[in-house]
Length: 203
Image (cartoon, rainbow, N blue to C red; front, side):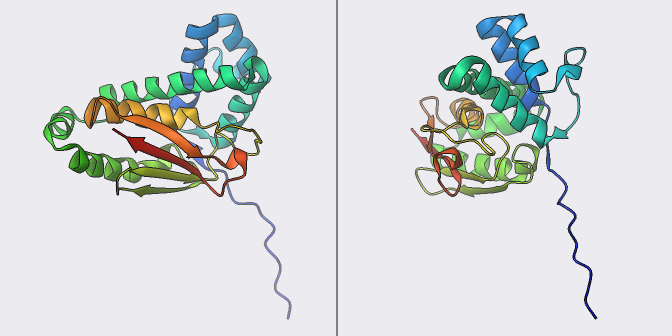
């Protein structure tokens, strides 16, 4: 007897509200409030004009936001705004989510060890930013973060990597907690045809 085929699509993932809040903050800092209004309206997120989200959001909202951002101010402008938004997210995590004793400990550890500890914490919380995507942390120097099918560049095609939001977040955390000269570069991006987005940390 034939079994019925389940054609129900998997539920979309959810990510933290910083993915929307910090983009809006960064864009307002770069180009003013009118651009934020235009962005949220173009992305179908005008309901956030009255109040920004306070809980996890549908990852598809984040994808639409980044598509609209690139269309509104161009790819290079969007990359700059996105990286700044990532740094702002890092600042939020340092202020609200990473306990002070843990921060003090990381700062006194040798950089390679501090990196491994930080990577473990990031891996444990990957569900808050990678959504339904796959996340991997590779600790050998240079440390690498891998995100496959994340929401930032979903469906996009570009000549250059687009996931500056993640790079900005990782870089701010590394500079504050591991090594102040740390630099995070996205060395591969699915928007460029790679199998996954790869972020490399060097200091």
